[in-house]
Length: 218
Image 1 (cartoon, rainbow, N blue to C red):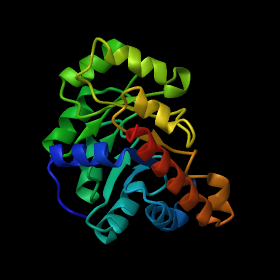
Image 2: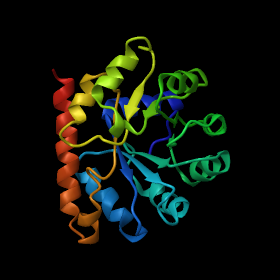
Image 3: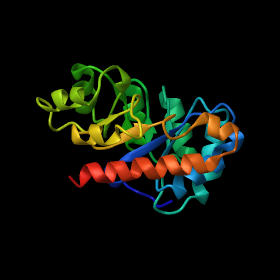
Image 4: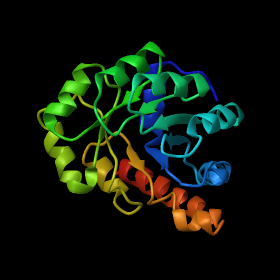
């Protein structure tokens, strides 16, 4: 993977439009999942800290990925985990919550951070603290219209909805003003992984990449 500045990494996430969230109980298939997503055109991947041995796996996989990949760590809740993840090779940090120590630690390590926020107050507070992107979570509870409403008074904020984003509605989020979408189980199908049907993940990745591209071309 290429070494990127914070701004370069953020620009790459915006360009790619899709961050795949890998959350799986059995880490042995992680490499196969990464390869399946890559074959489908998804180049920004987030391994959550709920995956067993997540830090070790990031350290194993990160050096083997092509230059055009962005490989990050998700479900990061404290500064210590930020440091461990970046030292292992994570190029961006994602959290389900807004914690000042996580933002500060990520910036100390020179990588972008995407804290999870829900209310407009949380979103603006995190943005003012220097968050590079705001992960709107859980987006399941709202919908694309919520992003449009938030961006009315806060057009400067870069929003990435996560939770509730599917292959079919990904384009709706982009059209509502999202700069990218975070997608987990909608493309990283746990049943397909258990059955070792990795082509299903590749097909899912191709479809969501196509839908994002189609939304942006309108």
